[in-house]
Image (cartoon, rainbow, N blue to C red; front, side, top):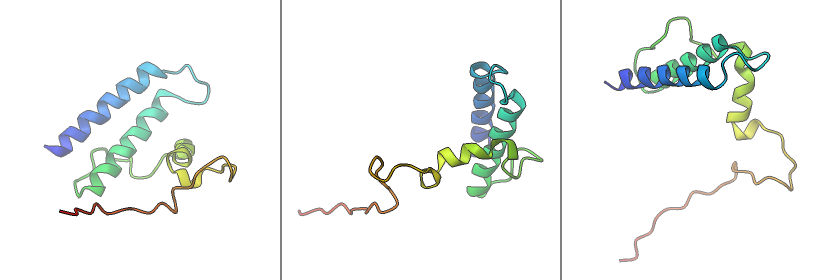
Length: 98
């Protein structure tokens, strides 16, 4: 059931990506969008302990490796005084005084 929900989400994301971006951006094709979303679908499934959805999409496509740099805040270089690092964020526990 959950695996099929992930598949449906991937298929919708692929259709949305094709609709929004299409082939209008030089260097970014529909095939690249499809491959990356299928890779993410496989990644989500394996992280949850499910079988992969798509054969041949086991590794991040080399053509889309730049996306990971923007999705991982620790990889983005910013001016020290302009950005607040989340690497040192302290989690707080909810304390019930009652």
